[in-house]
Length: 370
Image (tube, rainbow, N blue to C red; front, side, top):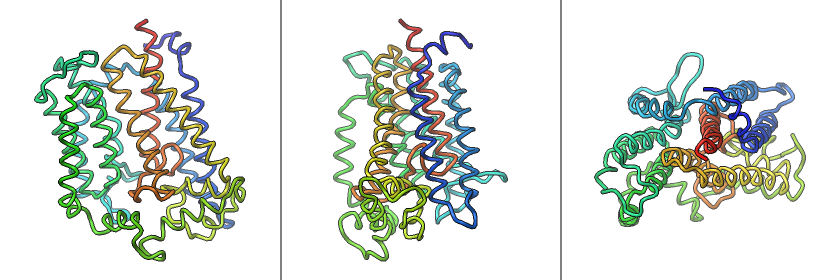
């Protein structure tokens, strides 16, 4: 139900920071795809439409009843698992991976939707089973978390099989953080971490050859003209920007087509080249304001189910930002994670806007408990 208090308590800092980042994203999708023959590219047109739609989704998610959203999110997640399975079997192939389902007029990426629905699934399941114990000192028995763990690992496995290692890591990581907030016994995470370390040789064999190569590149191996090409060109673009940058539309690594995926995964490199250190600092500042604001709000939320949903949603955005910037500067392997709100791509854009809208929803409703 709409209420004047909703607008009074609306988190305008969240909204304006989101709009600022979306605006920078549009500016650099324009810059990275600009040519004299076609100044306004099809990518920019789609991103403009996607941004308008994303803001609509943001506002809608800000006012929908959260309990209703959690209940529907729980049941939708089972349908999503079917979509993930279908994507592996008969999905649309792009860049060597089956990550999309074609719906004639556009394509959707079910793995992106998993990042949005998973926190609702976990929160609703825990609340319905009376297992939420956010403020209790004792931990529920591990068996109470068995079902969400099975769903989490199944989702991550299906995404990994597409193959999409980056999104699988995001879903698994944000899901585990959500379960941590739901007060899962810390012993599980210790055992899980030990198993990861001891099982590293086995996991290495599971990775595709190109995924193994990306990790080896991070360790200094590979030819600069082959395996290391993306990382080297990204670092050249970032370094050549200096403090003030080369100016909008004047990035040579971008315009001379040295930098691959400049409007998607490596858009931060274009920002650094054209706006320099100060442009990069502006982007980092805006993300910092957004995350600090959201974390401050979630610390004030007394409702356990809303806190679980909020932490789950902020986790996938925060992890995406850290992984994307880490890979373009060369301190993390390249895993194909877009930069939220800035990179071209409608599925990721809409999921991020929906997540931020829900977080604004939580910010509004926290006053209803006071």
